[in-house]
Length: 229
Ligand code: DX5
Ligand code: ZN
Figure: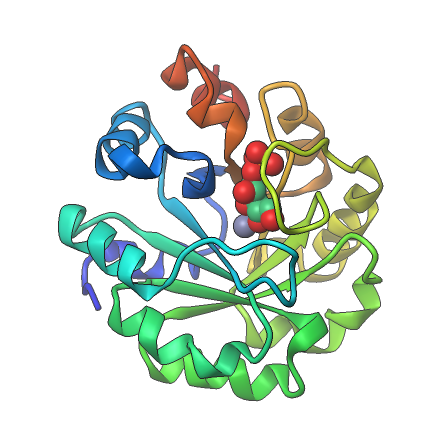
């Protein structure tokens, strides 16, 4: 677990929108080079999508990938998104592998308050995610125990899907209730085209996979997604 100022990146109130490329869209055969490219192009952190083939219909990667990234990038903030059943079974192994932040899905967690506490005890910041079909009421009672709420903007499982604008009303509801005491993360279908509506609704961490890794001008597209083009 790193102890640099990055550790609280997702715990601090939003000072500016952050852009987090999802490595699911990187070329796994040159993962470190692809990550170096997006970081050199202005990405603020890396988003690591973990899928188990049960909670979502796809399989992706495990703690070993997180550990490899930590070895290559000792000071980069690693934001792990667990799209898995029984996430409590894997929190320790991802934090031991170097995760700074761990997000779990409200749909598969019995006791969100307990899991937030255990993520913090292990030295990482906790996040709670909800799928497009999950009403925002499902997370409201637990928000204050987490540093970040991930409002999925696609149905989880694959990159390259179209952004679902109907989720923006959940973002507005969270911002209206909690102000800037929490970070709200967009995840799925985020690009320079869809980012302005995300920022306007109140998202302040923008995950982008296919748009950034498929870009022929990553610096320009990252700046455009952050709204600083
Ligand atoms: C979807 C993942 C997203 C996805 C983003 O299940 O959680 O992070 O990889 O990829 P794009 O930006 O291509 O939708
Ligand atoms: Zn994700």
